[in-house]
Length: 460
Image (cartoon, rainbow, N blue to C red):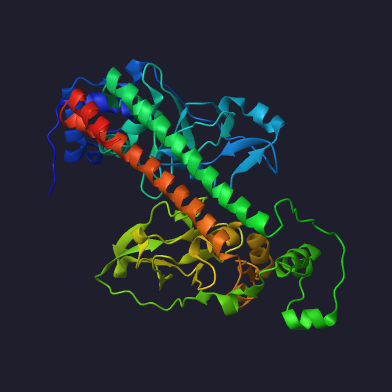
């Protein structure tokens, strides 16, 4: 049994956060609170931090306009714009101008299972936030430092303390204002330098991946190719019989055009069915063995795996039935997430992935080339063509096997591999820098600012 003894003054103080429940006074929460107070921290309100709670106003999504950020875009330490970004019209953005996010604003998810996730907005153009996030302007605190603090072990514990409710946890703004934050000027400067370096490396990672894709499309003679959606077209009965499909979209001419272009590649081509090894999804996990489990939400925009669930076999979802190894490529089968394709690195060797993926490898194409091909417009069109179903539209194993893949020359595959590996290495370095920044804040809290700065300098 855990218990805490608190004085009346602490109860009165907590009432400003609308909390008088025992959960709020858990020993581990109080331990962190007392440690931060002991090193001279001040409440967020003392630093003139401004917290806005965006209002929910009806809006419509458009193909091109002002970026609209939802809670799902706010990840720990980063704004994820690869997870199906949406846009609203300039008119709707004007009506929602109170929800405007600008460069260096901090976002914290307000409710739901991921309540408390925090990231800084570092895009040059402004965006509009949904009502499911708080917008923080950092006042007298460095926004990079404040973001790192909120993502450190101590910051996460304090934000966790502020959650209330069970089925749909929420965080109240009055609580955030009461969070104690240390004010180390020198460490804040070093944290910002580290964060900016990480951002530059992330951009370099994206550039290298884009270069790999450009190499592939140029090799295929499709660098400038754009699909054209035809409103009317015709097909014959024999084609429908062979495909066993009668839905109109399957016979869109743009699909035939791209497949014809691949087939005209001088080095030749084949199909996934005869040139790629497609793994089974029949693995049975051991109940008490711990596994890494990868699902669609764990896939990044440049073919990387951002994170995963770690759990014993008995606690994994029933769809965790495909075992993958380093060098495999996992391809989403679900329409709407077809771009969720990733390379399995050594870190995820022998992990399990969802049956929502096709797990593949090839003796003809190296893994990096296979990844880039399937994520490119050329591969994505073929995957989209193969999707079928009503409630959950997806591309099944047989239809996936019909996808056409080119026999890219060995030299060009080596170039693509080099670009992709550079992309992955830059991204890993960027991630490591942010982890170092978090640890530096924790060292400063546990020891002192000078020790934290020296440590950060030694590892960055």
